Amino acid sequence: MKRLLWFLFVLTLIGSCLLGSTTIHPFNLTAVERDILFGLRLPRVLFSAVIGAMLGLSGSVYQLTLKNPLADSFTTGAASSAALGAVLAIALGIPLSLVPLVALLTGLGGLLLVYRLARRDGFINPVSMILAGIVMNIVASAVISFSKYYFEDSLSSIVFWLMGGFFVVDWEKLLVCVTVFAVAYLLFTRRALQLNLLALDEHSAQTLGVNVHRLRSFAFVIATLLVAVAVSHTGIIGFVGLIVPHIARSLFGSDMRHNLFYSSLLGALLLTAADTLARIIIPGGAELPVGIVTALLGGGFFLYLLQTRRERFWHG
Image (cartoon, rainbow, N blue to C red; front, side, top):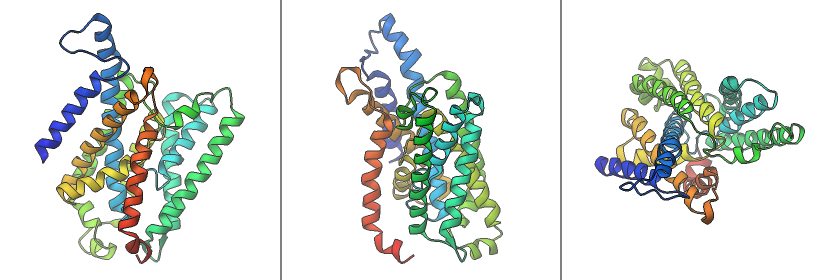
């Protein structure tokens, strides 16, 4: 299974580099095709893989620390809160280098608010969390809509950006995202054993020497940092972090030493494939925002989880 997954990932990367509005023939490259491949297509494919890995990794951590199989950056309101911060930063003329920082602060604020609303008597109610996440998405969307209306000149392209996509990609942005992902991944893998203990009830985890509050706060900050950086570069791409941790757990088990890696790999595979589909699904060279593709996939998966685990949600 592991070899098959790696084979599919490499095949997806190669196919994504060759497919698009202009099909590239790898064994007979023209000068134009070479420029398209190395100047546009390759950085975009690598960028989509890194963003997918970031979202997959954050989704795995959210679902573990919140003990909620429906938790990801979108359903918890972290993505929309981060997007709100990014939009306001752009509208107010804050330097682009500081946009991810503002997105991180608002994303953390939104996630912590949802967490407080869902936590009662030391336990997290999954239904309350999803409802609070929905409310956060609605409020953030309303403020973003007001910003689009009030700052119309500076946010003329924000509607397309909020659908999620890889519209402006370069090697510098790719390097930033690779660095953030690598640091976050190393920090999580060093604490994989503690994260496994966090899957127990809080009393048992504390008895085994885990500072639950500190570890959960650390996990929230790093996971939301991944979401904030991704959102500030690509807009809202929902449900990647919802789907891939479930697939990783079903194929390779729930041990976080494996789940962190395979959630990242499956996230990269899923988003690269979705971006390729978004580029070729409309004839004539038009491009569909990749957030629409992931929303369609994630929406169906979300309904499946609600249907199969409905009793467990309502009765805790």
